[in-house]
Amino acid sequence: MSNQLHVMAEQPVSARFRLASRTQNTLTHDDLATELLKDFNRQSPLTVRSSEDIHAIGKKLELSGETLCVVINRKDDVIGMLHMKDLIGSLPMSLASQRGSSIADLVAQDVMRPVWSLPTIGFKKLQNLTVDDLLSTFRELHSDYLLVIETVAGEEDKVVRGLLSADELSRRLGVPVNTTPRPESFSDIVHAVRKTLG
Image (cartoon, rainbow, N blue to C red):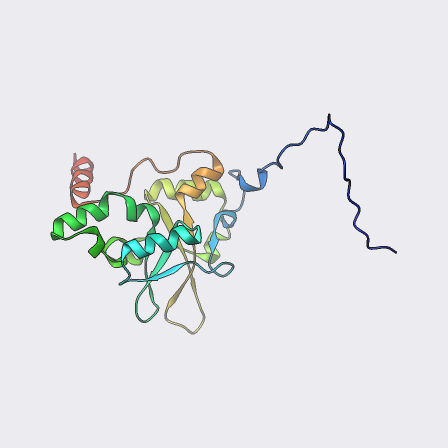
């Protein structure tokens, strides 16, 4: 039996070509929520130190093609998440202004989303949810992210298994998820609280 490669060298002038369908990138409401999981067991996330300056982090994100990184401390504990939009939004400018410094003086810990502030879901529970369940959860939480955690038997620490993104869910499902933007300054927080209290 021959292992020769069969190549069609010429195509008729009338042949039509199109790009492959991107259906594998879309979701339905009945798909499993794990389809959306950025699973850190399968692909390690980009990590940065809490003391790293935000300009250097922006370059790392740009070079890696990622939009999100995990912030770790000296002990390699996960302490936060940082998205590219956290680096280029109004938060860095507002913080620098409040401190009387420049944006160049800001580090990851200044603009990250602390891990304790992110809503979490257990990996086992996630495995039983549909995309529709996840959509409802994001809308209820008004959060951009949902941290997926695992508890390892015999260990006290929780393991960050992965991350779910409202933006990614919206893009792949084709529907808006969050209608309430994340406050980026103290003023935004005050306005949000006043609106809630009436």
